[in-house]
Image 1 (cartoon, helix red, strand yellow):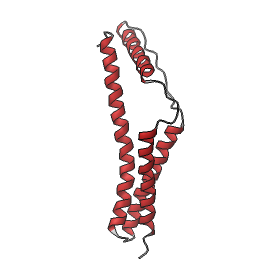
Image 2 (tube, helix red, strand yellow):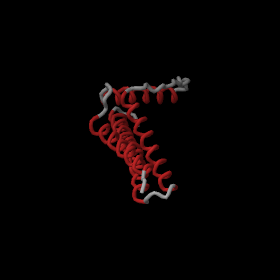
Image 3 (cartoon, helix red, strand yellow):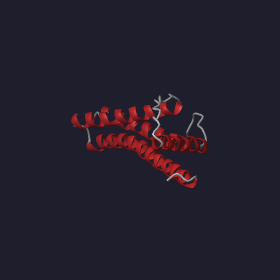
Image 4 (tube, one colour):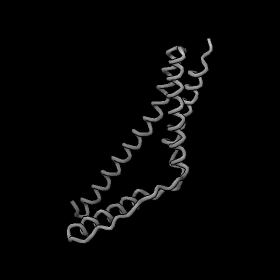
Length: 141
């Protein structure tokens, strides 16, 4: 039996999951500011915005443009590989290839994408907790 779509999906899904794991455990690969610097800047910005809002001053709205670096490229490539694996798993299933192979490709693709979201959500929660702890220690909140 020719299982071309399913096997290709398993390969792409495996690559995506491995890339997500390597990036999680080995990254970040781009230079990052220290956590103290980020928290201090955010806390100072939040405090100033709160003071300005309470005193009736107009709060200055700033825009933020995300920089493309090695870490964001890895995240994008992981999501693309995971999506390709998921699509190939569905195509494999519609072509009546063995369900184990089609399901494996789909599960690997979804796992790689979900791993990225879960890791990002955990990091955001930790950052929020750290910022709130700093704000409460300096008397804001």
